[in-house]
Image (cartoon, rainbow, N blue to C red):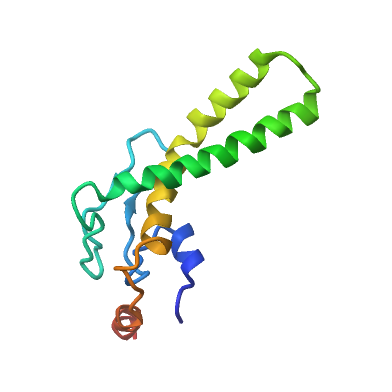
Length: 133
């Protein structure tokens, strides 16, 4: 059965085969996130060209803006505070806390949705299903 694109992004799967993992370990942990250079299943090189993931900064920026605006408005609605220090603390904490999430998912969104060179190939998933039987 084919894995949907959204499920593949949420599970950090390769955009071509949707079987191999792109990252080693969880989003949050005590060690630095490690992204594989190639897909362990189909061999796709994730960094398509040198500096390719600089484009992920734009996606990460969009994530950060959405998070900051949401938390800023939520803080205003819940506290009705006019103190700028409350907002500074809440927003800087949000940026710090969401940084690992933004790193991982900005790269995943870039590869899965914004890269026309990389297409899903169900043959790789069918190949794995044949190995399991």
